[in-house]
Length: 273
Image 1: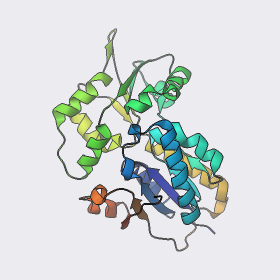
Image 2: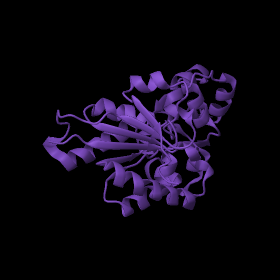
Image 3: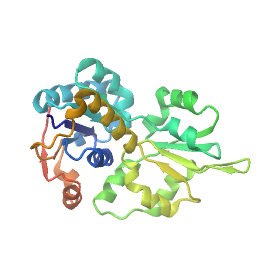
């Protein structure tokens, strides 16, 4: 009987939205959350730099932690490095993909927007998703500067500048031939942390698609395939932990939040030099 060990990885705290979904679906698993905050945000790195860094990080993490599943809870890292990670390691990886297909199926107005980092918006991978799954729709791609940083500041108790937030969101709300944007795809795992604040400044109501539920569902499918009926056995498991690179500022003022989602142990860890 096996308790699965799940490693959830992000450049910062946005991946906690994915961790929470996994925890809800698989509360008996053992979790390690890794925040590579030393180089947050990943969009500032060149693609080849990010691939080299992630391969080096996971070389250490997989050997040391022995995870059964690695979850890349970051759109930027997934679009750039998921293929080389899968090629390099035998451990299964689940990544994060903008929910273009879901939005294309659910939109009623035919207008939806992808709100993502500038790097995610400009990549051919993203545009290929639109061409493949939403060619029948009018899709607006919005590269949001600094929205991930705003989300992390909000987690730490800083008030949101709603005028600034409204300015960031404005390009995602489109009116065309009597129709309006009715769905916004959140193309960064940080963004769901701000949904309640977004609702306060949106010019009209829309549906927001959080990527976390689909990621957790896919992770559950992979683990079921690996362990079958032995999954989620009621045996003793290790305490859930959060480790981070960079400075200690990442965990300032969020101790209660982390405890509420079962992350009682936090520590700084360089992982690689």
